Image (cartoon, rainbow, N blue to C red):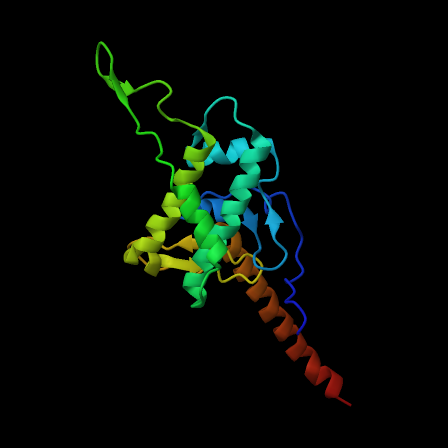
Length: 215
């Protein structure tokens, strides 16, 4: 067997560890909590505080009394399965049966239906109707992945960041020019800066070459 691929050397900054919420779908936002796949995964949701921040960022509210460690373990397992399935669509390969079975198992519970209540003047979401027990929260995320795989138009918009360091999976917008980078602010600007440095280095090398050959 050949050596495992190595990720390009790069600094792990606080910004790289930030949670990202711009993948275009709930399940891909979960996948994005582990960066720099498939080599050198970078954990962005490794504790209860980050779990709570991610839930707020994607608009999911765990019901009171949940076990953060247990929910983290379940989300990490779902994250790995979702990455396997979503990346298989791009790579033209068959995902692991274990990944498919886990997603189907987690999607099985019926999430509670949101409810409205009347107020004296209008209408509002019923208090507590957005609270999700652990199995319901996992089901919402798993069902989003199934919806993505089932929708041909969404599958066609699935892509991977061109950065060799990032490789984030995301959905291109339904209209407009497809994105090469997960974010111009992140990987796009980094790629432009790196290209500028390469051009400058090549120019400087070209200027030095005649000098080294002169007598």
